[in-house]
Image: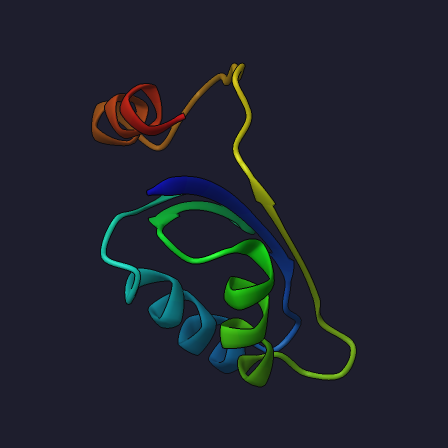
Length: 89
């Protein structure tokens, strides 16, 4: 299992909500900020991209990267998110 950072820009709120539901379908996920989430999966970055691509408009953006060995953050969405990030990043 690897942790991936998924960053996105989606203008349409309905599309963004559907996209976030697809991120939740990975089962192990954490919103980092409004347009950036972390997910845990056995999939590769290209597979994640290809799975999420149908839920994006032509002008939307997506970036997927496998988490590295070092991370830092400030002001998470609460202690549960903070604990999740400590565990998975």
